[in-house]
Image 1 (tube, rainbow, N blue to C red):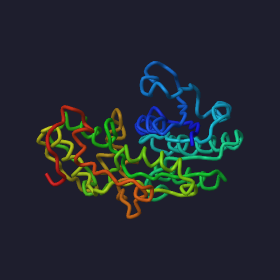
Image 2 (image 1 turned 135 degrees about the vertical axis):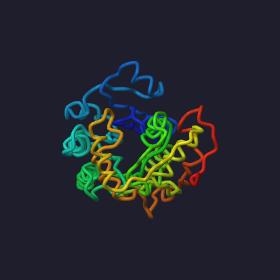
Image 3 (image 1 turned 45 degrees about the vertical axis):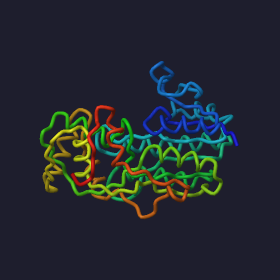
Amino acid sequence: MTQHVVVLGGTGFVGRHLVPRLLRGGHRVTVLSRSASPAQRALLPADAALRAGDVYDPGFLRSAFLDADAVVNLVGILNESGDNGAGFERVFVGLAETMIAAMQAADVRRLLQMSALHAGEGQSHYLQARGRAERGVRNSGLAWTLFRPSVIAGPGDGLFCRFDALLKLAPVLPIGRADARFQPVWVGDVAEAYARALEDPASVGQSYDLVGPEVLTLAEIVRLTAHARGRHRAVIALPDALGRLQAEIGEHLPGKPISRDNWRSLQSDSVSDDNGLPRLGIIPTPVTPKVPEILGRSATTQVHAGG
């Protein structure tokens, strides 16, 4: 059944994969964005509508939702300005509250909400805010579905591509929590999960952990990135005391290559024994063979996790 789907965060990393998938499924898609500039327009397929406005404005959201059948919220940040949780609170909790109220006012019931693996656990401001947003969604009375991915991998991601930028300059890369474990999930699988859940009434009221089939340590992820570029880089595992110091320094560097809150998040492995992808009929994609694709055409070296 064709639906009109309004997507918040549709020009972001996951959104740029999800919007084309929804269009291929025959749906009508409207993406909400701060601007409708040519640069933003270029991020989307021609068949997607782009509507400019402030997603934190209740009136704008109510107007945007009036003829919608479903809302997808992909808005997120990995770091905030400062380290008091206020930035995460605004982006995750505040926006969720405004969006839910606007959906109720516009009589739109279907919501697909991005969260994070282990939301609400640990000491990280990021995870705690994600958890509070989840509780708001669960208590909203809407027909909700929650998605809780581990780190998401794909071209332009904040994982392999982030380390690739650091490895261009650093012959030696010291990292804290080098043995922290992840199950990177392919961005195409994440987009497919949203599309299938949208069309499956059984997904209402469900929460899906989204993880890949491989468990990789942080050190293995860095080595895979270096090998894909044909670079020889030494990865030094820092003891916790130095890892915390590295995060403290990174907090004040441009772009926050690592922050205090990243360090807090790293205290919990981003893995799950309850992968929601097979529940949606999706075979999880191994990320390791895709590292060259993630980094671009110049990355052609064969990669393997143990190298």
